[in-house]
Length: 464
Image (cartoon, rainbow, N blue to C red):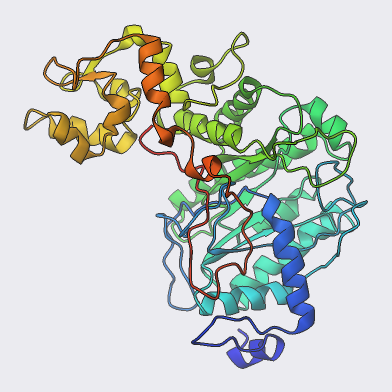
């Protein structure tokens, strides 16, 4: 393992108190500035989803409750060092800022530089893990090998035991992907666009088959490794936090129904932990890209995240939320409220008798509050003040529930009446979108003043 003195020869010491200015050599600072900014369009990173305590021989640990102290609107985590290995790329994807024809500053890290940055930022409590993506430098194999060298060195030479999320490069040798997977907590492969036709139009260098092949490999390797760990307790673990992907929203004409159907298929067929949705940002002047005079479709992105939550935690199916006759979400109501309004024959439900699955479908009742209701009603009668203490959002739920056979207020069970009242709830549209203060996060935005909540968090949908 390299000594701290060895590391600091390459990376000058940061101040331990006062304004947290980062004193790097100009070359390394320039790389960090370019490659952290270039990584902001990749949203497929999240909290760890895995418990792994340090064994005392290295630095760091990973907690399942999440390493993320704050989320940006597109799902990015503030406390990860989120960078590209390189923004050089041999591909020419029309939507990508880093494509080979873009006239932008280019930079490439070395494996040693990424290791040094990760350790030095970690030691100063700026980050708790690494998210490493990359453009395609020379070839998929060459790029994947560089990523493997980085995580291998970080785990072995630096003994870093914190969270690491890396990209698996489509088209790379499966052996390289497998080797890298034993040193990462999570891997992701970006599907990018919902359909093969869209990929062909905007990213002709990529194909659906090339992307899905390593996704299937990772799924199979995770399953095989779980069996090995069950037999041999100390066997190395392969991608223990699972895999995720990203879909760009609004660059191509697919409906919400098509997008959510793709996501549902990925969860069911590939066992993905998470699908991320990235509102299309028009960063290239390309005739094949849609004009976005109103900016990125952030509210649509938000509704897709809410619907994704319903698929994963509330036992909804896509066909319950949308269909070919009604292919897009109502932008003014969250998907759960919209579904309830179209199924008023199922309401109101009685809090004391409804089963857990039924409670999950009530707007304003989340999975935690539904469990609390089921547990609390065993020992006492619940009333509306009790539900509020439990965590139920009564301003949404009151139209759809009864306690002891009575509603909270005399209300009409009519779609127009309930819809007007729900639309008056300002929380139906996130404050950041209402006020128009959404921004992309910069790695150095908050170092001088400590952690600060970004104006986002759109993918964290609770008590729907």
